[in-house]
Length: 123
Image 1: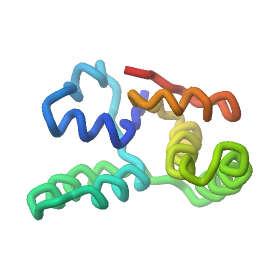
Image 2: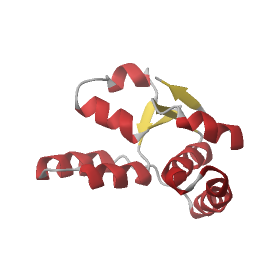
Image 3: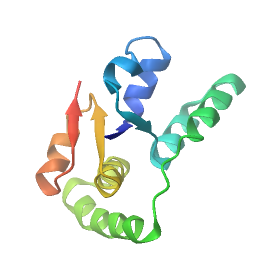
């Protein structure tokens, strides 16, 4: 199965607090453009930017129809959840469209899943 890590999981891995291999358990890691954007916003050094760029080379291609559907659905969901959840909603819907499991420690995704089902593993 394909797996998307939420931004918090990538940060935990970079700090040595989590093991990517342990979390993957043989699944294939892909990365969402949303997570790349969040990681780059937080990068404080050129080295961190290079590491994120390397990670971005694993970007999962999202075909336009599913992306359009995710953004449309997200618009309705964000009205209910609030604008601060926009990236999380888009990440969840992107994972669903890609048939990928979303791995996170952010329990806020449980609320998102009440509005749209998607594979989720909380760690």
